[in-house]
Length: 390
Image 1 (cartoon, rainbow, N blue to C red):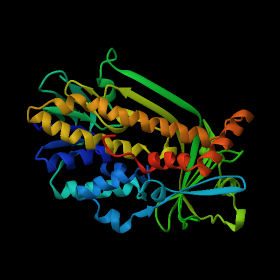
Image 2: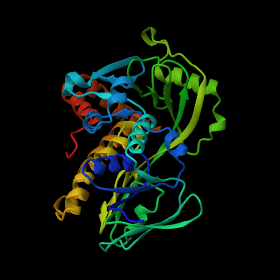
Image 3: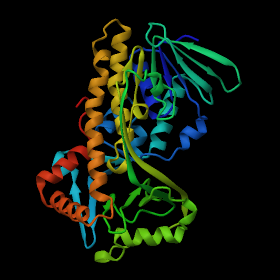
Image 4: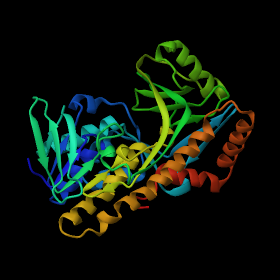
């Protein structure tokens, strides 16, 4: 097979990149290890930055988002006996949307299917070749067990932290930074209307808790738990009791309404950055190059920002102008490190460590953020999303 851009990974970053390239007349082929059903059903991010929403609208992917998404003006920050609302629109003129990654994926699949995009799901033994030449290729075994070679002008790794693209950058050239946090999130989906109009981020001596949502009838909630927590040790009743305590059930009359739990999982918390995000004719985007803890709602949005920078860079490169492609890694990493810092800041402000000194610092920081316009604006600016290309 032959194409202009070989894209490894059919998640949001890979399919959005193919969509943006097609709008510029650039052909691509996408290969994906997982099945289409698995990729479509992954429970991941649920908050879209203003910049992400603006881009999706601009490229014709905003119709269902505008109809079914839930715009939020801000978030609540709380600790025992205190709850404060930060209004992002008042502070920065920007908002966020609650619209799950599964819904973004549906929109992308529908758009790319309608356009006749070539996507190979369920492949195995994916390998990258000749990345320092102008004829790189990707080999894989397709779902029927047939070995394939896909030749391209450019290869893009959108295959996350466990795909082959990240490791294809020679060890002598890549640098990595990683932080593993000493706690995880226990997350649930529940078939119950949210008990809040906007997200609640709660500091509590027992550990962080968060009340989010996916729709008017589905709630998404999280608890801070120790690393290595076994999901079987947490019954539904134990989870709801802990959520009620940490989220302040009964505080100023607020009530947490429990409901049937439909999904339950434990999510490790870590940060990871690899650079460069380009090696020869290989470019990395999304989780293939960086991972952030979910506290700042940055993972999906960072991937979108990556491909928004990468698509015009590849289009120009294929036309003979390498300037944007040569600058892609540095441009993307500027935003990556800003979002990595913000995610770390939100995480360390809200998660307990067991250290009484840290506890007082966290409470002091929360009081400052919720009482200082400058502090609140800084959080709002980062959470609602800096412009793509920042």
